[in-house]
Length: 59
Image 1 (cartoon, helix red, strand yellow):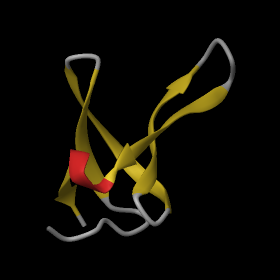
Image 2 (tube, one colour; image 1 turned 90 degrees about the vertical axis):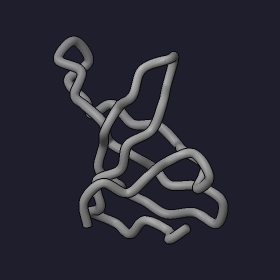
Image 3 (cartoon, helix red, strand yellow; image 1 turned 180 degrees about the vertical axis):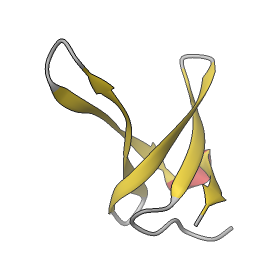
């Protein structure tokens, strides 16, 4: 399995739903992903996903 790079689009599962997002940071065991935008808080939605739990959909 290849590790995502900053700017790659990945898909991952969260709360039973498949989501897509853009990698904005890389750590040793995980990536930081921006997967939407909260209009109420006026900030991006981000989450951390382990390298084992995503698939790269677009480089």
